Length: 250
Image 1 (cartoon, helix red, strand yellow):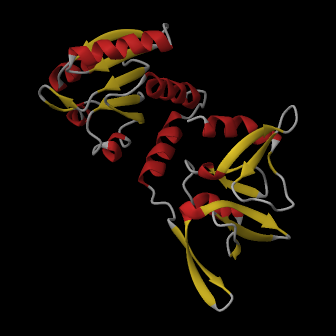
Image 2 (cartoon, one colour):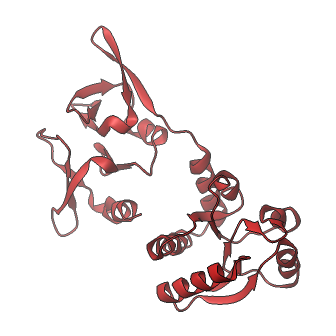
Image 3 (spheres, helix red, strand yellow):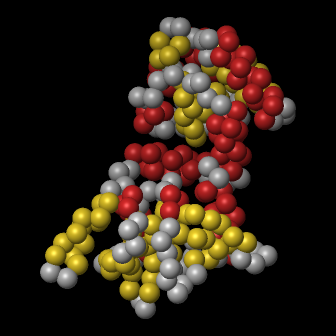
């Protein structure tokens, strides 16, 4: 893999190179650039690398000025001390946004994400999905009728969504079961996929509610959810185990 570093702090660039050598010695750093101007000139004169590591504040300006002159279609991992540029970063091919000082495991996760994404053939679609997810406002609460009353339930207080006897329920952090007028498919599009995962046809679980993960068989996993004492076991289906492991290991 050929990688380019755009970073105006020499110590930061050296630290990044050292970490990359630990994570994957096969990553070849082909150049280190320090300014917007040098970056534009370099991109105009060279074939673009497989991956770009880019700081935001450079010696002569902000890195986003590069994109005004150059059409960059390669993935970018931003490394910066500023958190206010995240939305803008994900509009220009970013696959991750690391805040300095980042750790070995932060960079390792970003490289893992790069490797996972590029097993997919349609990179444009991957980028579109990333931008959509970072920009989308997910549902923060559910306003639900309970008898003659209405309750406002924070999404963060929901341990799981599940199907029972063809009806969909939420199971709350205080142990209540409340029916909702959504299908699990509709809920998947409304709630944050970083927090919730559909483990099988009948359950969507909140990552913060998982107390234990148990080997259920040679190819499935059983989850223990806070306060869950219903008759149904919560088992990750065979075809979702790999995706579940990647989701919970982010």
